[in-house]
Length: 47
Image (cartoon, helix red, strand yellow):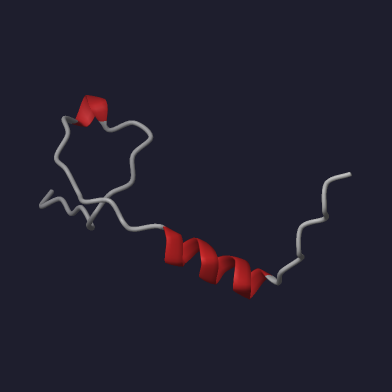
């Protein structure tokens, strides 16, 4: 039988995840290709 994994708290799980990942850089894409993406900065209109 496989050993049971150690249980950790939410704070420790969050710390481990954040230590293992790095943010992606931003990129410019056409508006029609932007569906499902997240903005890198606030967008404002002069209208």
